[in-house]
Length: 343
Image (cartoon, rainbow, N blue to C red; front, top):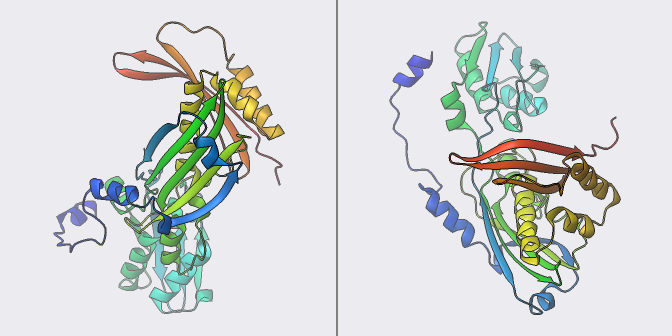
């Protein structure tokens, strides 16, 4: 089956999105303008005045498209019978699968029986079901016969709806060895709009995922502002693990690290000092204790910390690395988090 698929010669028309990555990055760079501002859900103190009070430190970070790459490529078995369709697959959205298969097969939703199986990883990948649509279309020509559709690893990557591309621009001020101001602007296309369109769902209002993991950082920086900018649709995108926090948390922590370094402060101690949430402070202190933060390191070794609160779960990681001729080698990782109440 894989050999037959590779033998097919297809001629494709031009895509609606730019053909090269440079144009995608350019679209993000052009979106840091007032008419594309999507949200400003964090605005503490007086950021503009604070930025005028001292030397402004600037930082820019980028996050690329990323494939889901689950251990198990997407797959499904579909059998179209008389007045009944059976689907065996791993999915995160069985009701949407049921409705989509019913529409293709020309039966009612109640006549589609979705048998939800264990998944070999997903990370948001199985919020999509293009492979199920294809399997159903093929099964329509083979009535009564179960049809199994499995993407090759290569096809899984090609057909994936990846994590969103994103970019940040930040400014900050430090005074007397402390971080006193931070302004973080984040530009990204809307995951919810792209995904919602394929599910037949409208998404009114701002997309909170553009700034998720950044606007809600529990630091008491005296002057803190987080703004989101909506980039026009580029490549079709989908939820990837922590959705917005996968890029916004990365931007926020790297920006904070840049400011802490400029202040000459200790990355762990300054985070703990700024932390305005008791549970999150304990998470940071636990990570510091586990990793023996502050202990002397051998030459060529380094230690870093990052903290992100995503979907209500504060998490801190300390990573210890060694610089080698081949590049950075990760030696140890310590993780502390508070998952809340298990229900």
